[in-house]
Each structure stands twice: as C-alpha cells, then as structure tokens.
Amino acid sequence: MKLVEQMLRGENLALARLISLVENESSEVPEIMKLISPHLGKAHRIGITGPPGTGKSTLVDKLASLMRKQDLKVGIIAVDPSSPFTGGAVLGDRIRMQQHYLDAGVFIRSMATRGSVGGLPQTAGSAIKLLDAAGKDIILVETVGVGQSEVDIMEKTDTVLVIQCPESGDAIQTMKAGLFEIADIFVVNKADHPDADRLLRDIQAMLRLREPSWWDIPVVATEAVNDVGINELYEQVQLHHRVLCETGQLSQRRQLQRRFDFIKTVEHKLTHKLLKSIEQDGQLGRYIEMVEMGELDPYSAADELLKSGNLLTDWLCQRPPG
Image 1 (cartoon, rainbow, N blue to C red):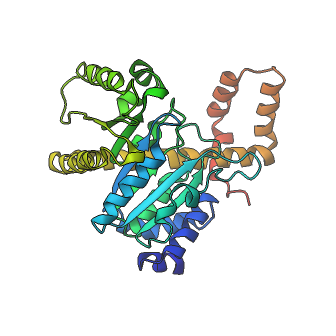
Image 2 (image 1 turned 30 degrees about the vertical axis):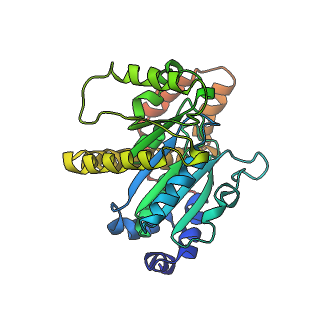
Image 3 (image 1 turned 90 degrees about the vertical axis):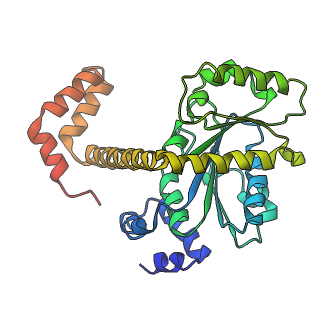
C-alpha cells in the first residue's frame, strides 16, 4: 500500500491520512495494520491522564520540548471531547501546542472521543501503532480527562502519568476514581497552590499502604506553566522505562496489550456485525422487538439467541453486510 510505504519513509502527510482512515474505520484498516505489524514495538508510549483542568496539555507541551532537545521524534495524540454537531474534536491541536506546529520532529493529532467512556476513542490504539511504525521515539497520549474511567490508557501505553492538582479534589477521591490503581507516576501540578503540599502528602501516605512491588510510584510536584519540576518529571519517566526494560515488565505489558487489543477487536467486529444483521435478519430483529415491547427480558432474549445454534451459526458464517 502506497500510503504505508510513504509513512515508513517518514512522510507525516501519509501518516495523517492513515490515521484518518483508521478514525473513519475504513475497509483498508485491516490491511494497514497487517503491513505495519513488523515495524511495531520501538516507541516508548506514555499516557497522561487525570481530571479536567489539571494542566495535562501544558505538561505534554513541556515534556515534548524536553524530548526534542534530545533530538527525539515525538508523536502526540490529544483526545478531546466530541463536537455535538460534527463528531470531531472540539479543541484543535494547533491551538493547544502552537510552539510545535512548525517542528517536523513533532507530530500532533487531536482525536475525538466519539462516545467512548474510557478516556480514549476506540481507534486510539491503531493511531498509536501508526505513530510507532512511523518511527516516533516517544508517543504521548493525553486522555480527555473524564476522571472516572481512564483505565483504557493502561491497556495502550507503557508508562501512565496521573495528573492531580489541588483544585481537582482530595487524594481519597482520586483513589475512588480508579486513577490510583493505574498510576506509574503521580504528578501534583500547580504546586504553587496553597493546598498543593497537603495533596502531595496525602498521595504519598496512600502509596505507603500499597503492597511492595517492582516499582515505587513517585510523586512529582510541578508548575507546568512556569517550567518548574518538568526536568524531574522527565527523569522519572526515563527511569520507569529503564526499570520496565530491566525487569522484563515491558515485555509482559506489551503481551497483555496485544491480548486486550485482540479481544476488543473481536468484540468490536462482532458487535458491528450483529447490529448490521439485526437490520437485515427478521428473526434477529424479532428478539429486539420482543425486548422493546417488554415481552421478553434482555437476559432471556440473549440466552435464547445464544442457545439457538443454527441461527447463530448462520449469522456468524454469512458474508458481512455491504
């Protein structure tokens, strides 16, 4: 495929077009993923998550600047809320990180959530793979910041930064939100705030309650807008990657990521196929009608459908609609 060949040669325009094909779920996506598969696994994938308003975009911007000083090629995926009118990203990548706009060593792409509740759109994993295959040394993935359901980032990246700031609530709420379990590094941003020290101490106190493991989660204080603590944060990011490699954890994480990717791909394809089939198959559509009319509860309908071997086999074996 010509676009893939161009991307592998380092052409960012081809990379942008391939990501668009992925976002639009083009029929060419399976072939694209097959072609780039031998070129994956070299980039350090870093996830940045946390509640809205914690300064995630500013931290990404500052980290990217540090990485560029080391002559590293950086890919950035910034996930934004979807526009209710177009379905596209509300905030533009050019607005958020203007200083990198003319830097050929930084590729920035805004992606819309498109209804996803896990902080990342369904297609983000494929976009990350494209950036990896394109030769980016580091990929920064900033989630939308929904705060309560960010676990997707753990399934797609190697190092997860959880950003908190005094205005985002106390550390106990962080733990309840599930962010506590996925963090490799905690960042207390806006550290000049009067309550920042208390938040930092609270997070450190909770970390001491954890069972000992191969990695001691650090808590780094930053003031992203003033370039304070960014070097220290980047040092911890590099250290985490080094320990991942030395302990074999990176290989284990990548194996789990491939497993999750496979399962979610199958799930996505089956769901899409089922919905298409319901539109065309009268018997499948009848189950929907019965559930809608209250004649059959969803669990019983699902059980009957799955027990109907011939119906299910015929559905699975039929050619994809369209």
